[in-house]
Image (tube, rainbow, N blue to C red):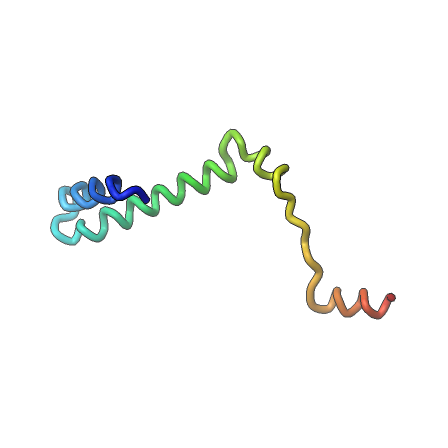
Amino acid sequence: MHPLLAFVAMFGGVIAFGLIGLLIGPLVTSGLVTVLRIYARDLGPHAEENDKAAPIKPKPSGALVEVQKLQH
């Protein structure tokens, strides 16, 4: 999070919550920034482009690996 945004969040927190807002303001702001970044990555207008760029291949694990070893 940009330091200026954290600084402004501290003042907003103090206005909204009093002295404890020095901690709550930046926490709420960082949570909001995180939610917005997740939205932009997963559901935003370029989400399909991000999915095509790095396909995720599932890796077999556990019993499936053992069955595959027995078949070979």
